Image (cartoon, rainbow, N blue to C red):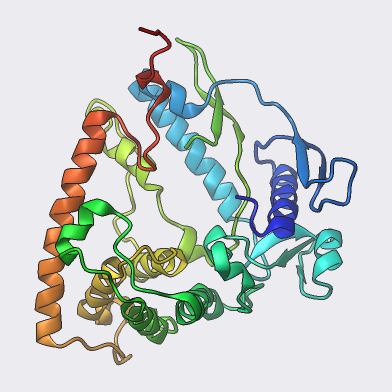
Length: 356
């Protein structure tokens, strides 16, 4: 998780310190080194030990009013972070750190100690992608931001792509256990590029039974990206699920009725262009097809849609999507029954300390 080695440490430190200056609750940084040229012989960050439980550890113990309070605190913090202006897209650095490895590349902030430099989002550098010479920022326009990661993944697939089975085994029967060609994903990424111009374990809290639950500190700032607002202004799915499931006796925060459809479509595309290929491309293709059916609403009209799918392709994709939906639902049901999280991590409460 320290790829790209120098950039990710330097960016995390600068991001934390910048958020501190903006009044965001983050741990204090006591010292750091982004390279191995130090006594320890390794990059490091010394940061404050924050006392208190993780929000995930106490979430089920919170009452409805406490849940709503935490959600409001979280959205207020998010709002303050989202209101911070930046002159370009990418990731944040101390200017002095970026100058050591990429002189002249950074775009300075009003506070000249900070600058925007290459994006440290892990999917841009994962595996052999780190050795590909592609644009990783800073990005000077929203269009460049939208296109960069897709161009990265296309370059990777053309150099190193090979047929793969879907990584998620429960979806393999829907593909008749056939390896999927990387050219299919390249084709859909190129389709995505044709429309780009148109279109919490890291939360620590202060809480004890019977008292208010307050967010004490936010962790895990590595791989943080600065992106256009419409790619970031979404309600995190987990928080949305919790809010939707709150007791009817309370009034949970609700999503605005006039959500920007273009922003939602672009956020979906942004997710798939960053995601490393996992042996299939169906989710991206389904969103591209949906974009064609809503094109006038997404663009406001007057812009011809550059995408076209034939009827046979649409029918085959619809059948595949239904099979994948059922397979995914079944797998997620088994996860929920077994108490296994999204990343296959079982909760610590499931493990027993006794021996037999």
